[in-house]
Amino acid sequence: MMKTKSQMPDFKLLDLSYMKQISRNDFAYERAVIKVFIQTIPENLKELNNALQLKSYIDLHRIFHHMKSSLSVMGLDKKLNRFFEEDQLGKIDIQQLKEDIDFINAVCTKAVDEAKQYLKVIC
Amino acid sequence: MNCLIIDDNEIARLTLAQLLSLDSSLKLIGECASAKDAFVKILDIQVDLLLLDIEMPEMSGIELAKSLGDKQPLIIFTTSKRDYAVEAFDLRVVDFVTKPILPARFLQSIDKAKKIFHQKDIATKEAQDEFIFIRDSNTVRRIRLNDILFLEAKGDYVQVAVQGKTYAIHSSLKAVEDKLPKHFFIRVHRSFIVNVSKIDTIEGGTLIIEGNFVPVSDSFRGSLNKRIQIL
Image (cartoon, rainbow over all chains, first blue to last red; front, top):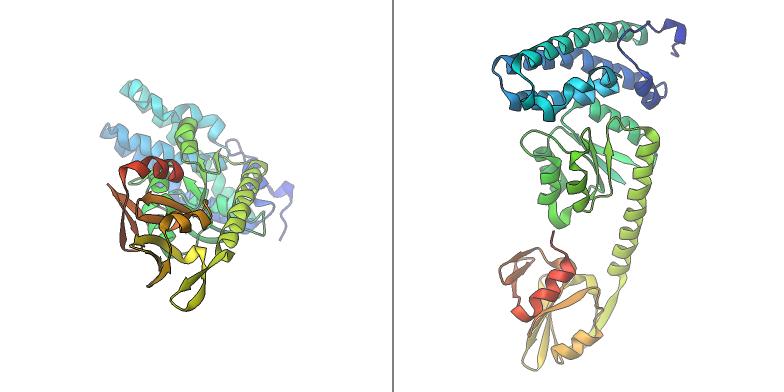
């Protein structure tokens, strides 16, 4: 079933223009991507918080890198990329890193809520 | 072309699969979440093109490409970091694209891969079709050049080794060498000529070709190294 633009929620964070360009109205693809996003991002955030507590820069680097691919498909890269500079990880003090990860948490949690709204539209 | 996607991120795999559907000549034959899984799969099935992420846990895409050696299919590296570009291109891959990958950029890489694939395909078919006739005792036999593993001088004869068999030609190795196409064969020893495409491994001064040990002499080592372009 084709979805009309008027049914699209008004997103504050997500920018689905890239995903739309790839999907070419293939809603099966969009549903699959959104479901994985909703499932994996909270897991990634949990891992990120654990790695921060342990001050494990290796894990932070790995999780940042892993999240980048998911975030870029959902159009969050422009908002968050500056926090995902893996090479800068060791140069940032821990307090600043904590603040950055809090911000990433807040943005990604809200983005997951928006993704859930969109999933309702395309299901 | 049979394509395999290798990426530890599921959204990236879904997106690459969707991009592959833009070209009906591409067939997605599998997806792997790790380079280790892919390594096993590539040895098991016919893969023509890898869409290969670079930064993955345990084994990176670059390590996978290096470990495949001569069995390496065509590779398009897909990554979110540009830092690996130089190292990746040193591996003679088709292309290096950064995520998020736009459809036009993706199709550009696919066009490059298809051109290389068709060139290789033609070369392989030509190689498979070329043949020579040899006189073995009282019989004249047709042997496909691609079936010959190596040739060995033995007294007044040259022994031609093909899979599971050998034939003897009454001739000198030099006379046979002059008649063989240079793009297939190379002299590696006073008494040995090998089919370059059949070399499995080189260990010190010895080549291994389908379980046969062939010595490499110092005087021919330079031309062999130049010919096989070791990375």
